[in-house]
Image 1 (cartoon, one colour):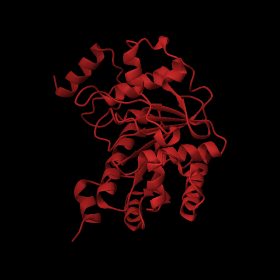
Image 2 (spheres, one colour):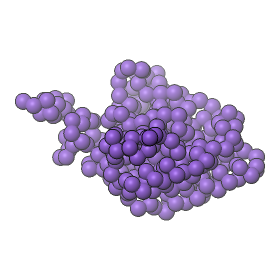
Image 3 (cartoon, one colour):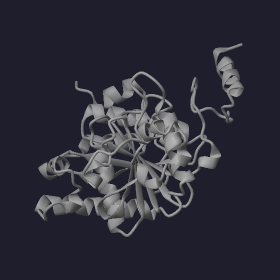
Image 4 (tube, one colour):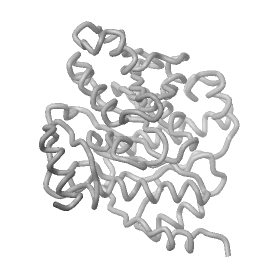
Length: 307
């Protein structure tokens, strides 16, 4: 029996569903329970290199959607649970920690135990993650969606945003893609960020074989210029859908635990707000599903590396 057949046998014995057409050669992934499918809302998954500004982007995008009159739910998928603190002004406990406190008896919880209402009515949830070196982020995402569905928290929502930690290196980090309609990548005009984007594109394309998720495009964040991002996009068939310049106002908003929409009307802040509003309108109106072809490592080094 081949290693791949062995994995399939073990998964079947454990009751893990196996779909035709795996998510890439050698992939070992827990597939979504279809009863957990999020219906009635547009679902976006925000990815990008660690430290690139995904949480800042996600929170300001949530705020922009709310300013358009949309009912928004943001789910932070990171053990450090800081995705939503600019929306709420505080760190909130994680779903996993709250479930542990009730010995995983979800029926003992009320929505206010794990959902905090932030700026302009945005509902905020921090999924959290397993202790370092143990467990899988995919399980955490699944338990969070299950809890939200049990408490009917997804029934009056127009927009769901998953803010996902770091690069995609395993099926657990890719789990939000099982729920999303569109994946958005936050990048910068440098090699490391674009290299991470290239890997994320490959992950989304793998997930798109079994799920409805498609790529919406990328956001150039904290970048004066976008020439390298645009050059990469031209080669692989991808789109840059927004540009957030490297302005100090965004850094200061994080320090003040506020979104840009709560900051003073300085010129840079007004400009950044307008770009977030434009991006929210673009995403809500619907983007064409993109199918870029990620580059092999050698080719991306030749495209963007130094001579």
